[in-house]
View 1 (spheres, helix red, strand yellow):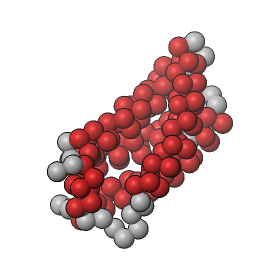
View 2 (tube, helix red, strand yellow):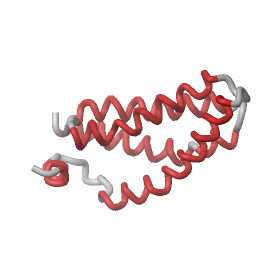
View 3 (cartoon, one colour):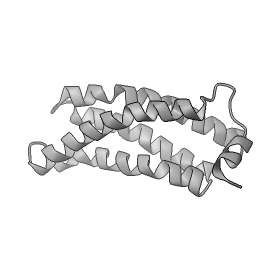
View 4 (cartoon, one colour):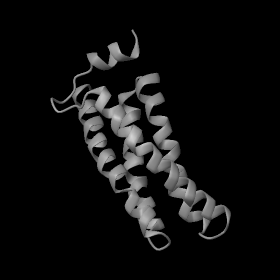
Length: 131
């Protein structure tokens, strides 16, 4: 069974966005993430901020990149649920950690936080509906 057939077979809340909508949102968010995270890593490399400030950004990036392989590759809705909670939590950690050094980078994460909050609720709902 291909991935979309499997995904379509899952029970989902009625408010689940269409896959094209999800793709559009990520295509807007990924450039914001790329620019701001890159700036954090450059500043840490240049010793303008401590490396511990870059840590939540690194964890977030890894967890974000792991979501689709866990969800669509392994087809593990449970591991994907744990992963997205990590993504959500590390966004907040990123914002708090970077705030004293760059408020605009912290504020640039707001759209990411809003979307991942929605995505986390969606993933937890899908997990509960298919448990």
